[in-house]
Image (cartoon, rainbow, N blue to C red):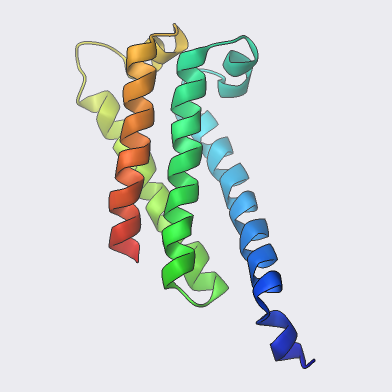
Length: 137
């Protein structure tokens, strides 16, 4: 099998995409940890369902954006670039969510396990990931 044939094999491509997206997902979770005022994984460890829902929505959202990016873009740099762009839009959406709710602080409500706010955060991340994904594909 030639080198180009090996690299274009579906199993190799799948493993490569998986590896890159997992790495990007880890980086995005670190960045979300910086953006939020609470410690995501510490809160989840302590049983905070709202943080788990909000974090799960972010994970789903990022993975969904990369799903669209993989489906549309043929090269690894394009896939990563568009995925990172989509992730950036998701972060902006999270900041806008905080801005659009002046009656309360989203981060404080999620940290105090307000499940309604955690669920809305999850829904925003998931819903907008489809819009962002469709736009980048």
